[in-house]
Structure formats: C-alpha cells, structure tokens
Length: 122
Image (cartoon, rainbow, N blue to C red; front, side, top):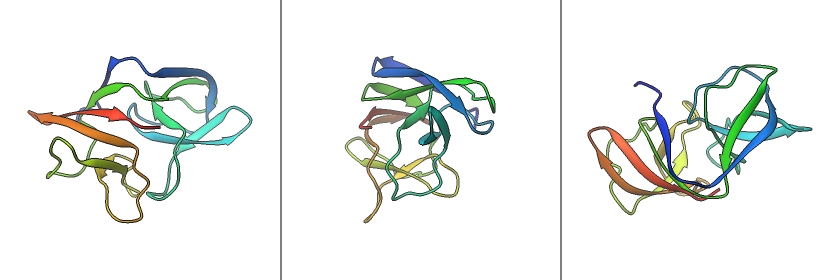
C-alpha cells in the first residue's frame, strides 16, 4: 500500500510531542512519556491518536486525535463496509475490523477503490 492518509474534516492535531521511533503516517500511537509517542502495539490498548505525517525518531511529530473524518489506505481487513467499527491491528498497527475485546478507534463510512473513509473516535 502507498501509506496514504488524508484529513477530510478536522479533528484536533496535536504537534508538541516527539516520536520515539520512525513511523508511517496513519499509524496509531500511544503516549509513552513526557510529550513522547510510540506506535501502539496492542489491539486492546487505548491509543492517543494517529500520526498525521511520517514521524522521525527524536523529532516533533503531528498526531490527529479527538475526532475528525479521515481517509486512508492503511487498513488490513478486506471485509470493511460502511457502519463497521474499526480497531488497530496489533501486528501491523493499521486499521482492521473490530472484534471482541478490541478497543474501537473508528467507524467506517465507506470503502471505495481501496481507500477507507472513517470517523476517528479517539
């Protein structure tokens, strides 16, 4: 996939944190310390938000949080349809169809030509 993520309707964009490691845009993050963020490693953990742009270790990064509408090709489930709850896949850190015990991070609006449009819930 091309690592595409785009904001359609604004949520809050937090830009005062530092990335712990390099990461692609659209991956979900957790707060790891004093204004630092790392890629989320669990489907059951509550994320802070998702990277708005590629993150570079040790540098300021932008994180979308507190809602908004986004579109991305960063998802791993092929059976996502409008109305589905979305969670974070623990192995890829991309969006997936939520299953029992997963923390729901988004709500699918549409999937067209491999691009998922969704509402961010964190």
